Length: 287
Image 1 (cartoon, one colour):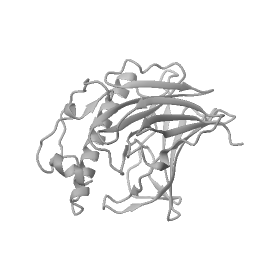
Image 2 (spheres, helix red, strand yellow):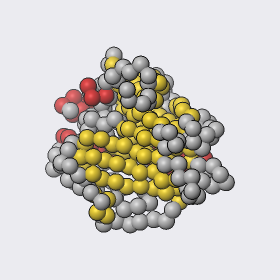
Image 3 (tube, helix red, strand yellow):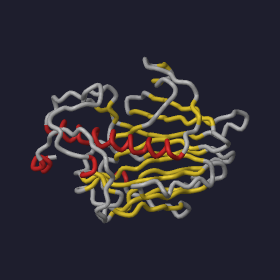
Image 4 (cartoon, helix red, strand yellow):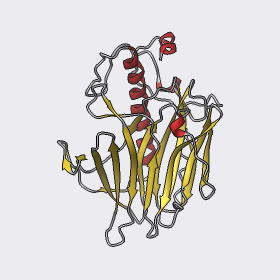
């Protein structure tokens, strides 16, 4: 029998859908398995490769001052992508945002939770993917850190032997599509089958404080909102090229405060302006 997992789920279109799961190992390491039905785009060229598995390894590292968080992506063409971050706790307190994810359509059958009696389920409630996009932020921390006061997010957590998994989430007011978007921070170069790819490397980082974590979450929300909007536009215009840097493309016609709410059943929104791609809402019926 496989070891039990904690599975974070949400209800949509009458289906219990799994968002990600966490498995604790004997020494306190964690394996986090992100459910993704969408394929992976490597070169911002509109060409997608089927993704077999997305896993994050969280290591205790008892003989080192910090912890290593490694992202593994296994592709259908046999390639394996790895990137990692090494984070040193500050004043013996660890906090790090592992990823922010604007999910694809969670009513897809691949997300359907396969009932296992030894699993623990933690629910993020329910939503309608025809009207909203689930945006969640996954934070690893020391046990006992409280993120419940961060403005504009719903919050839940799970304590393990050595770490605490924290989830903060909300919803974008937009049609969900079959391509999600992920924002993460890494300190190492991306490796493909063990070969480093061109790109910068950064020194080890100190764990940020709560104020910095909150800024990271809102920055990621803005990036995910812009990315989702671009993908909507590109489904209507496949020849559209993604800009290398954030900036206007089309008209500035939407505000983040009109797009994002902390709960699907309330009207509460977060402020913040963004650049949006000009999309005729009527065109969304064709997606």
